[in-house]
Length: 181
Image 1 (tube, helix red, strand yellow):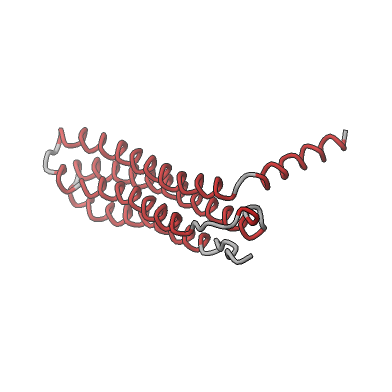
Image 2: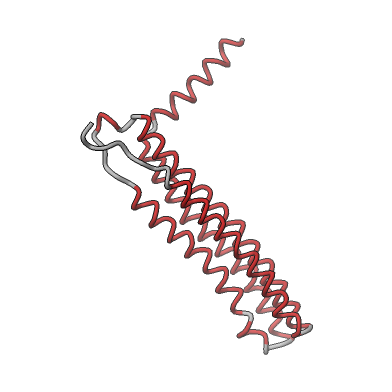
């Protein structure tokens, strides 16, 4: 029974090591942009629906609460920026070095960076969307609350920037083997 478990672990590790680092890199880049856009869309959906509903009671809030939609859109832009940065990290290596430890490390670093940025921006988009929704509803009731809640929304938007910073730091670990070897 214990031999079966060890065999399964060896199979998984064997599979992970034999997947091209370029595949991991491409998945990381795709997740960075795709999940960031999903977070932005979800935030815009949450904010927009509350903004439209609250504007029925107080039409004056429509234009100034669009800042919440802009904050959500910034989340998608963070994902696009990081995807471009990660794309520039890709380098071609000789076929003999595709599975070298340095190549695997570079592929995993780009993959991890994309995952971190994508999911940080997903959470950021949700956070900004929920706070933007609260901002619209509160502003419809009491206009003096707008600036106070907007400050909270700015702090929520910082979550996406933290993800971008961590992603850039992670991607700095991506160094491919030189072509000479």
